[in-house]
Image (cartoon, rainbow over all chains, first blue to last red; front, side, top):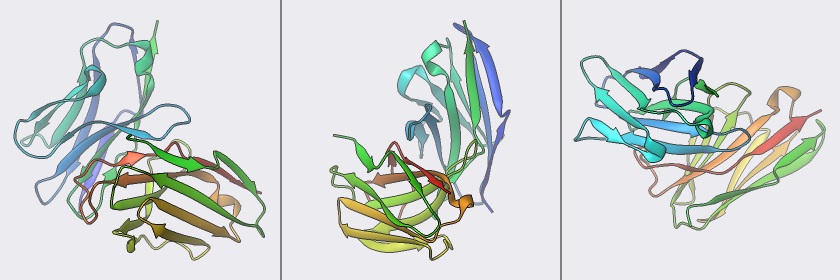
Length: 111
Length: 115
């Protein structure tokens, strides 16, 4: 069965600091992996996705994620946090039959 | 235009009411989705329409009835809901149906409260 685990329901970083949101997946077939962001009172917006090819994926707003098959991980990073990055972040896996979301990580940014 | 619109933004209804949620996209997408999201939880898939046909129903109670009148429009009809159905209902669309590798574009949601 496919699943997604996001480590840490809440992450707080200072403005300008590195952002690291962790995601591990379980999939019996080569997965497609996604990161979505949800700002308060809004729908989800795709940050980036991995399908095949280059394992380092660059997304919008300066975010990137690296697919590591050996570690079954797809962690999201951003070198320098901005106040506008405060939101809920969802990692998701799609083994082609459906999309499965992780439980989400709330990112807070300290001034 | 990469926008998915949903109306209304907020809806309060009693358990005996009948109401409908509406979703619209003009991106030419052929797959549309309904999700339910409870507070501090990830979205849960309810229904998928692919080329205007219902392709997935995730064992949703019959008090939720989806409808896809055309390729741009998706409705969710609500009847005899329970207070536990209160949630944010999200609509999404993607280019092709039948695959989840496509980017899904989400609307802002309808915040539903059942009294």
